[in-house]
Amino acid sequence: MKKLFTTKVKDQIFYLTIKNSENGNRVSDQLATELTQTIDTAALDQKAIVIITEGEDFCLGRAVMGEPEGKLPEAYEMRHRFDAVFNFYDSFRRSPIPIICGVQGKAIGFGCAMAAICDITISAQDAIFQLPETSHGIMPTMAMSSLIDRVQRKAILYLTYTAMPVDAKYALNSGLISQIVPAKKLHQSLEEAAEAIRQIPFPAINAVKEFSSNSIGLPISAAEDYARSLHSLINSSEAMREK
Image (cartoon, rainbow, N blue to C red):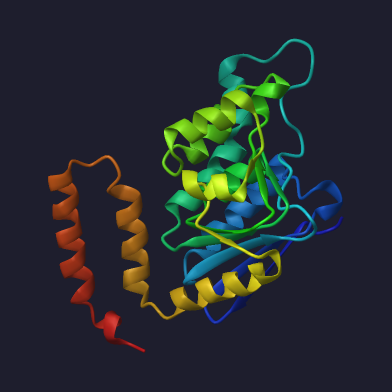
């Protein structure tokens, strides 16, 4: 059976490449589970994770979307069927290091969600993003859960209610991506971002991710106290002065 992704480590940066271009880099539940395990392991001792895909399109969605025709299982059973996808999203949030991805071509459904949930997303100028679930008669809250703390509310509602594709400029303005670059410079830009992170000591890398993840929703005073504690803790660490 063909391996659908490859990995390599270079200078404390973990590179994960999805190789399923014949099928639009669609992700099955099994592949999502394998990717989750890979991300969890890489996050233990690397400084950043870079995710890319091969081919013209970043990812055209899940390998199987929706449920087969006929009587559906009860809600409790159905809930567990989707754990592979939700746990995949959670692996990005629980990772103590930043996860970066580069988007080319189309990022549809699961692909759009994966682009959104990365900590840094660099997009080619001609990339297209779409959440088409409602147009297929599917409740879109699975994909929405990956966007909810990343993307503006009005953009989420537009993407989900209309199921319309949007361009990279719209994605940037709504917070779905971080940067737009010419397609031919996508990989170079990913390398530059990874190298910038590689230069940062581990404690600061972990603390930036921790604060950005956990301070959301806190009262300002609590967020300031949290920032003050982390600032003192991390900047007094000897590891911050190690080269």
